[in-house]
Length: 337
Image (cartoon, rainbow, N blue to C red):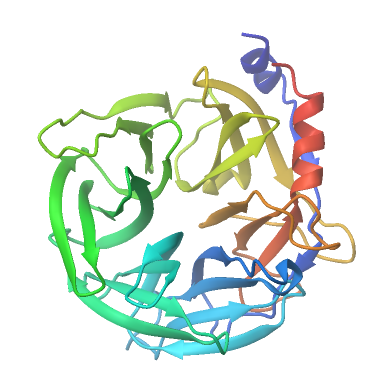
């Protein structure tokens, strides 16, 4: 295919960050993943919720969950646990109302936390659940036929699907096993698939059913190869929507680049980097990737991509960079499809 040939010839697109967050409170590998909490009444006041994992600190330092505004200012630190990955889904049926439910994987305890944003725009923890996943790292949420699920992913390659019956009960419904370390995952609800990044092997997808007895096995979307855009260290995954089409965006951590796949055809489309620009340093060795596909006010009129930056220059603690979806969608118009 022409896309693969262009990759081998070294063609990569370049994007630039529009905003960066305040640095992490801790040095080293201390933050990881993020998700957008949407304020429907005032989209420009939506928040970024991110994990403060401090995974390289011994003894483990107090960690928790951070929130930032769309200007990158830190607004809250909710201390507790060791959150690694985070996700949310709107419309969860709480007793009083339907509202976004947030889940986070806690790498040290192997537990999964449930959270809710309060009317005061402060995050609070609702519950903690054990998981059967050894070395829990990744987590992602999905909704199938009005049922809410999360997928817990371990660095041993184990994947478990839990149905969230309520904030007080979760039910294990499925379990899969990959051969090596995995973490990043994302649910494509229109396509009824969950995508899993097996870090040094490739990206898998699992067709989903709301009936636990109907179980599908993982299928390979693309594999790590010198001749392919994926290299060792596949991390965050996110879904981009554009003019009725959906794309998978994957962080290739060790190469500090991102690969895009058309989910209608499962074909590779393009590769891009996020270089220094707008008086903000570039992005390197990204863990978590989040894409929010709705307008967020005049600053991000088409939505935003939030990415973890491992090397926040000049010699600052790690942080997150925001990229306008307008730039990403314009880039896709130039990519051969």
